[in-house]
Length: 171
Image 1 (tube, rainbow, N blue to C red):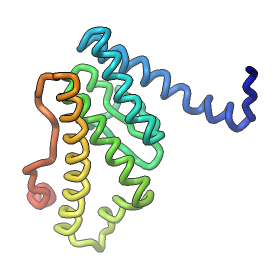
Image 2 (tube, helix red, strand yellow; image 1 turned 90 degrees about the horizontal axis):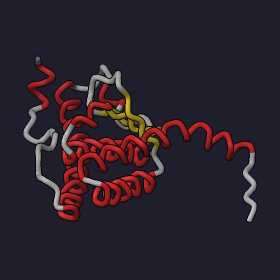
Image 3 (tube, rainbow, N blue to C red; image 1 turned 90 degrees about the vertical axis):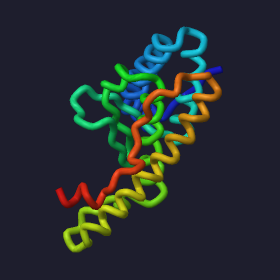
């Protein structure tokens, strides 16, 4: 069977291939190294399926000063996550996937309103906390599912739970 692709399809493949191939190899190698061949490959397939469901590009960067960032186009994660425990890694990936979904659902400017100089600073802090806690809930739900499925060590999971955003804005 012969498959013919249009020029735009080839261009799209070319644009995405660099991120997808790099991400696939990095995540697969990470999970196999941490969990062994069979368990690592299986978890990798599950995580990749979660990413594919959202049709999102994920890129790991060396020169990023935060755990991750998301917008309506992609999730960019720190390559330092490859030095972390599996549960920390999963929680971070799912947290950024949640933000990507939020952008897709609410539009490209959903978080930009927080930077409006006319918005009360306490209101902005409360809105930011709600956004982060929603991403935390999703990431903890997904991570806990995979902890049970693969009998993973619990470990530390990054979270905004208990953080008072109003004290952050005052400092």
